[in-house]
Length: 163
Image (cartoon, rainbow, N blue to C red):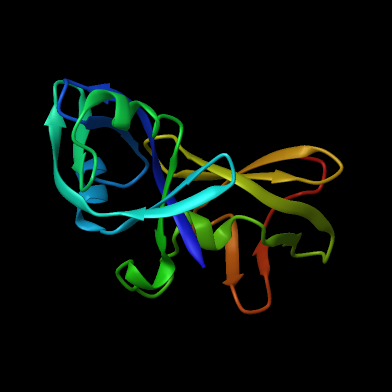
């Protein structure tokens, strides 16, 4: 299974460097994973990261085989993926967002609330975006999330169906 870590969003300079949007925390962590699997318009191909760094408020990377601006420009819009196995193991009760996306969410009364379609950060905690008959925003806290069972594809929450 592959996990999306970011996206190539532009070019930098004339030597083939690309601008990178990273979903990792800290965002520079994206450079520790190589090779990247790039996906663009249904095509998949691997590239080796030669160098990566912060540049101003963004990130830039040099990729093997891309030495000029025109070559790099063809990569704009590529999603950056790596294999799940290449990521560090999580601790107890720790999960990658990619592991939670798609799981069924059921409350303590056994009522299905929907599936996790996305997550986002608030600063205080992460929030599950659950889509069923309606969209629900459920904080990913020990008070709201009772159990996560990746193997059975379920999350049990202490959440009223009317919220």
